[in-house]
Length: 210
Image 1 (tube, rainbow, N blue to C red):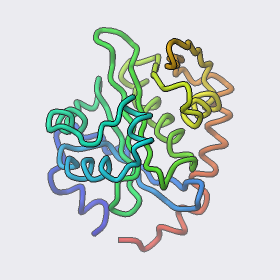
Image 2 (image 1 turned 180 degrees about the vertical axis):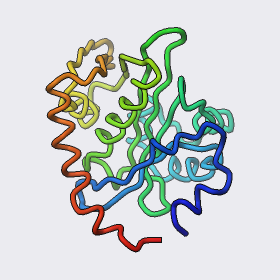
Image 3 (image 1 turned 90 degrees about the vertical axis):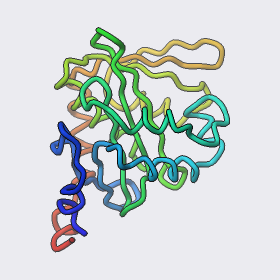
């Protein structure tokens, strides 16, 4: 079934089709990025259940083996403005999710990312950060912040290399990261390099797909 046919059924009001895209990742695979929908609840539960305990711990700061029903609703039912989430699909399998939540009445949003163990270190976290920043700016959000454990080297490296001027503060094993998402020259240059890699050959590879 083609992507348009899949979207035709059950797409919620306000669903931002413009936030969908394909991208090539570090292993040469082309993945599909799209906003999360309420109907993705079962897929999110399966994704979470397939993660290693270490990946879950790095995201939730505890061994959170199962998502509660409340968490599933909270994570999948968003307003696409102050609360926004993107998922990454490899075929029909969810392999990553990234989200932002605006801090009430401000231009600051908390961001979080979770990438399946099989797809880590392939550029997916940076892809999600770029796409979330692009969307967030259209809704008046100008600053992202996040908390990560000090030994989460991959996440900290992703924030360092993204191209935004990042501030970090360390306390009790947790690093708080904060940065403006205004596209400064360093970010524009880094983004252009990433986009060349993400788009290389996609037109040819996806012709005739259904």
